[in-house]
Length: 208
Image 1 (cartoon, rainbow, N blue to C red):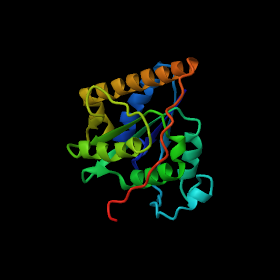
Image 2 (cartoon, helix red, strand yellow):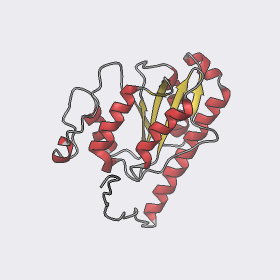
Image 3 (cartoon, rainbow, N blue to C red):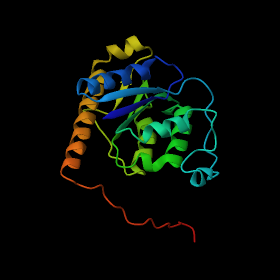
């Protein structure tokens, strides 16, 4: 089993990375492979709603960044953690652009796989940021992994984040819960418990 952890910060080894590493450590201790995917500080295009991915086998039309490479990794991944710093009480714009395109083009590769959001802030704006990220999961038939508190850490540097003992405790519990759910899903396969088969979607517009 493998979990992809996405660092939506431009800072490769900053506060968000520190939180993700704490989750990854517990997953690894529970014999679950992890990989931290760095979005880096290069430009990431926003989704323009062109719909080309629907005709390209789920491949986004833009190849300048690592969205398509991530979709390819998602095909064989078993779970996901998306992390972001908090900017003006919302996740980083780069993470949202990345997720919008990845989920729109590769939605079927995320369905029924557990996911969690993690955010890092100096002080506030965390719960609103968690809500925005989590909405990608709840529209994609993904089980949402929780912890003993909302999945957030506080601090203005990695050292300060490590001093947030409750935040680090929350990250470790998140790792434990993710590992437990993944193992439950693995056991369900042994008993031939099949994935839900949703009804065909009905498109209803509010304005008629």
